[in-house]
Image (cartoon, rainbow, N blue to C red; front, side, top):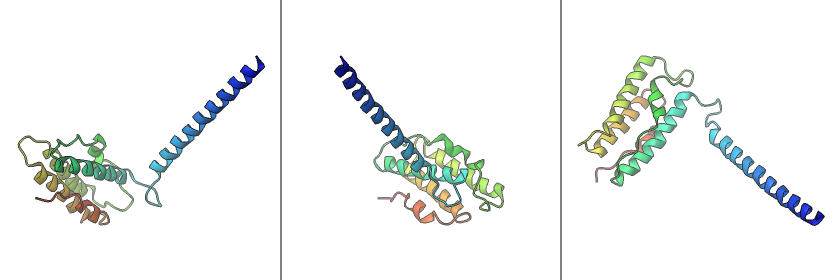
Length: 150
């Protein structure tokens, strides 16, 4: 009987160690995912912009493959209220004009009977236009989103 108890205890201990180590891997992956790209931390707006870029890449792939574009993440709608990196936006009204125009071009991709490639490229252009006034750094990456007219 004591051999059964020892064997059962040993198996339970192994299972427990596996559960604990898996939990640590998940926590490490979450920590890696959440680590800021900027040494001073990430603003709410920077995080929204990264979400926009990832959504844009997915949408480009879908449109190029003649698939209906997926709904964009709701978080993108917070572009006019998300807190920017300190000193990046001096006049929020001007920025919000760009942001509202972007949202209109983004929404237009989903209209019936539109050329989705053309509308998508208008949306990308709205991003470039804004970034020509605020934070030039991402412009080369944004321009890679354009869909060629083939």
